[in-house]
Image 1: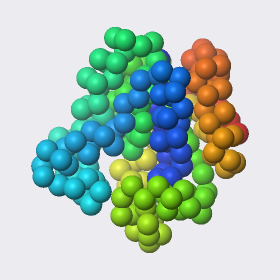
Image 2: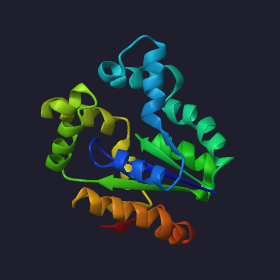
Image 3: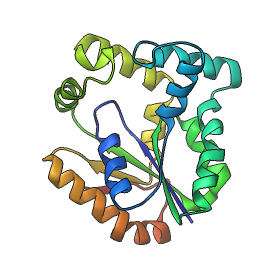
Image 4: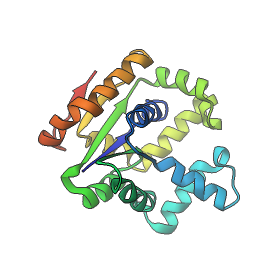
Length: 197
């Protein structure tokens, strides 16, 4: 059993990593989807209210609320697959939740890219309003870092730099998921990053 979590600022490449996992038939649990579902259940447009609802959930149910809501989904997928990718941790508290649940079988990957590169990618994506405005994006990042994302990134087992072409990034993720994950599982140490270009 392996549970691979990804963490990274908006536009870093988490969704692309998830897309590669899906192509490899690795089930993906997207934590943002949990929030989007709550938005819809509460009658809100996820594109406009994603951040507000995420904050409300954490205030109502505790800082690990979204991770805790994701756990049953992950465990169900593990009944059918040896490996599951969890897309989009936002805090060190969520990291602790997953490490408590899965122990050494949980590996956290921090996907990182420069701000300007991420702005270009988000402008193309246009999934929510903050994708289209640099100032709004900076505020969104400050909010997410306020959740403890920076601490989670610092504690990642592996750092993957997404600074080259999309095809090169896909190759790096595929290599990690099919080859390198075995070594990482055997030698993972949360106090020592392994870097991948």
